[in-house]
Length: 180
Figure 1: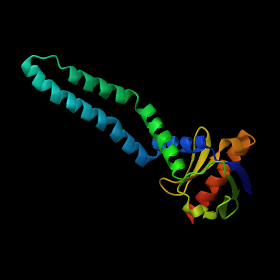
Figure 2: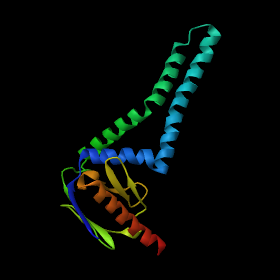
Figure 3: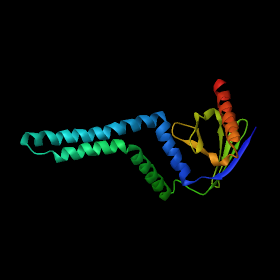
Figure 4: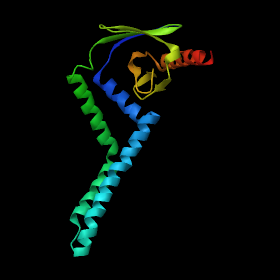
């Protein structure tokens, strides 16, 4: 069975992929976990640094309270801060010309490989190099390495049944090459 999809990549597709990747990739999750605790830890250390001298002088440690509040706010709003950073980086990449929207992408999934065709290039990808297939809320991500994936938005499927059949197809192709 072969599948062919033609669609335009949208800004939200890039955003959703980066958001999914940061929250589900093992490497990115470790990095996010480190940041989630390291930055508040720095704020708490700064709070202690300002608290100890002011306590000796009998002053109210206003700066310490401010740093503790920053630590709590950073921990609570970490995901929102992360989402903001993703959006900012996508805008920056778009301005530099490294991301292009509104380009037609055509994917043809065949028996041995799949082909990605854009107005600028054509690439043939063998199923043997796919490292993972992951399903997010808005797309299927076909990873070809730890940080790069082909995005197949769920909007290209006519039904849930077609989406399920496609997932079974792509996963069976990957399993076929992993057993050989």
